[in-house]
Image (cartoon, rainbow, N blue to C red; front, side, top):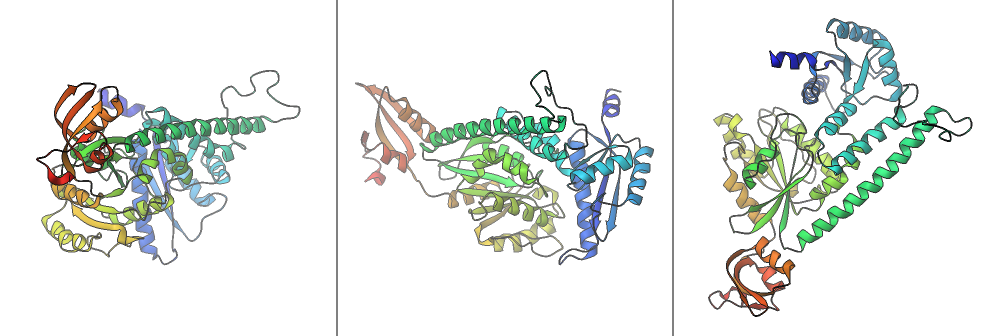
Length: 460
């Protein structure tokens, strides 16, 4: 009974998609199939936002109507369908212009939002940190600014008393001015967050440890893989954009070296550029990494197209040329025959394979060094993945050494404990004398106070 009440309280929505008959180099059937896949993805997004999808409609037409996107006649059909299904909201699988949005609402007598606004709503729900809230608000205000005209938008604390409006100034102008002021303050706050993040990153970099970033389409299993490799308990959910704020954890490689693994927000087709710009501070973890793990849901019929969308965003971030390991996840969802196909072709060529179709084309494909089939859920293939990471991360072999660290030098002491394995530690005079296994670069940095271990010739 409780679940039924919860379901009834959720907002009912009707989905609308528009597909063009032809595209540049795209056959009509392929374009329609892609549009249906995008509409199915929109349904998942709507459910992730807490809505109940009551129905959907896909229109195939030669060109987009600049005023209403889909034509007045089709909008009448949408209005009737939405009323029959008692939908309170219509979600359009396109990015609408302000005029199209206004005209569609007038024609359907229903509230209308587009794909971008839906994604922004999900991001607002998922943000947990102050940085996340700042970035979401910035993206929302940048989206709202050109759409104020004619919508009667009411913003809090606008026109609040004497002196808030100049002679002859309209409320629309006041709203725009206050939004621009707020956008300026948000950008300053995000710049402050970026400087703080840079300071923390520099502190991490003081300890010689490599960084590896997980990237991939949303719901590809990145967080599940992150938990499997780091033994963490980061939220795992089938909902899109379940992971929004970045998470960093240490991973021990087969060579006993450590790297930092970063789990970031999942990508999506037609991800708003303004949102990418707003989240640059978060995505800097990707930009600073020395190796990318491109995680793919190998069981998804369109995983090649999803990977292509991820590569587009990586190009936006100027990291498309970064060394990359292609991680084909969810092997447990594949048949034995499909797994053999991937192992025989995709992995041998260090690329990917479209099951039952053509090979996908990756820009800068030579950056993909290896490809591995895994199941983050069952653990299949994880040892091979760790070995590949170990091979691609620049070498910094582990050596055993004795070092002397002044008792008051907590920074160096923390470096030894963070990057190495301490066997013994004792106080001699005003120093900690530590026998530990640590990266060679760290041992060399501490060479002024280190004492070579006669049992380990590797420092000679």
